[in-house]
Structure formats: C-alpha cells, structure tokens
Length: 339
Image 1 (cartoon, rainbow, N blue to C red):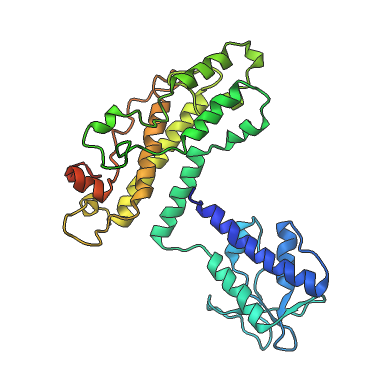
Image 2 (spheres, rainbow, N blue to C red):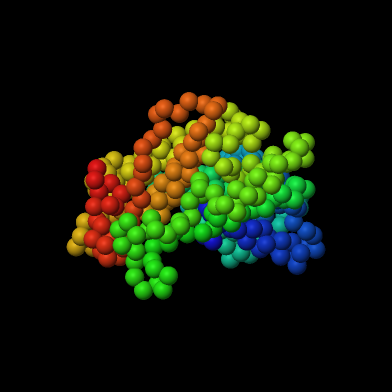
C-alpha cells in the first residue's frame, strides 16, 4: 500500500531522532527524551566544534516546532554575530550552554540538511498532493475505525472488518485470463467492488448483528466504516449525514483546485490528446481518488431521513489509462473530454 505523506514525514523525523540518540548514547551515555519538548531541548544544546566559543547552534526552522505543536525560541542578535537571514544558512548564533552537545562540522551539517529535507514544499502541486492525501486518509480510514480494536462485540466486528478489506480491492479492467482489456460496457457484466453496494454475505452479517437487543449492539464498531444504504437510527445520525455533506464539499473544492493547479483553470487543457507526448494531465491518480470518495459519500446519503440533499453534485468521470483508451477507442470517455 502506498505510504501517505504524513507517514513519510514521520519516518524522516524518526531517522533524525535515531541519529541523535546514537550520538547521545555513545558520547554522553544518556538517552534521547521521547517527548517533543525534551527532544527540542536536546537539539538546542547541540553546538558545532568550531568556533571554540561554541556559539554555532543548529538552525531549527519554525515549521519543526509547529509540526510538534510547540513554540520555538526567538532568534536574538548577539554582539559580533549578526543573525543570518538567509534560510539556507547552516547555523545560527546562540549563547553558550552549560551542557553543550558538541559534534563535528560534518555531523552538524548532516543534521541541518536533514531539516531541509523534512521541510514541506510550498509548491502548489505539492501542497495539493498533501491535502488530497490527508483527505483520502480521513475519508477511507475514519478516525473511529479504532472502534474495531476496542470492541468486544463478536458480530459487529466482522461486518466492519469486511468493509475495511473491500477498500483494498481494485476495479476489474481485464478478462479472467489477463489477455485483453474489457470492452466498453463489458465491465458491467462483472461484479465490481462498489463500496456502497453490500454483498449478501455482508448483509447477513448486518442482520445477525442487529437482531439482538439494542444494549448488546456496539454501534460504534458497527457503524465505524459503513452501513447499508438507507439505514439510520443509532448507526446513522444527522451529525453523520452533515459530516458526509462536509466531505462532499471538501472533495469538490479539491477537484476545483486540481484543475486550477494542473490545468491552469482550464479543463480542456487536461484532456488527453492523441499523438502528443508528455501530455500534462497531472497526477491522475489523485483526481481519480477524489472521484471515488465523492461517489462513496453520495451513496452514503442515499435514502437519508435526517437531511435534505437536493443539490448534490452530478456524476464525475475519472481519468482513464491511455492503453485502455487506445484498446477500446474510448478517448471521448476520459475525464473532461466532453466538457
């Protein structure tokens, strides 16, 4: 499974912590604090072995403190050591500390380079990618999915577990022998993995889970991932429906941002043109992910009794793979092709 941006960012921080913990263990026989505040106190004690007055400290960017929910110290000007304003300066002047952690110039520069690699890019395409990645994580892996780990309900657990498993399955685009792509309309003859349409096995699990007394049902677990269309009551409240509407709005805004960033606001520029190499359609997987989430959220509101949904967005079309479009001569079915 592809790693999310937040997972990659946390891995980078973990590598920095590992390097620093080795230095503390080998040279100072101490352990690196596990809490963020203690971690940054250690970083602030690091000094380069030159100059000898130990005034060259790590230049810790403000985003590092913000990521850990902390407020960084304000840089002050020291006599004879003007505060460097260039963001690529590898050190910042700081008064000597009573307990310095002295490292070589090579390791000092290594830590500073690590900070530059962790820093989030301000490029619009990178910012949009992070927003889509985090939105996908919130939509397909809800925070209350932890209810599956904490439940003791033996009937609610398998129903929600199956819903999680189906989110790992992909759409069928070829025949069973993998010898050709499916023709136009042929995909409807195959039972596809539609999150909003439950199988008979899942429906049976749901009936078994809800056939008991209300006090025996763990609704937090049963409704953690999905519920059959039209099911309301304890499992689907008005707050849940309002949350769906909020995610639909967010999804549409991200789709609009995709066109603005990768198509400069013009949908026609994102249409695949035959014979043109390096056709700039952007990272199409991101847009297709938004289409999947939008369709899923709309189906969750089907038959809702708690909110009125007269103005839901219409159908959205995904970007198609170029080889599949060529095989079926389906270039007109690509996203934005009919716009």
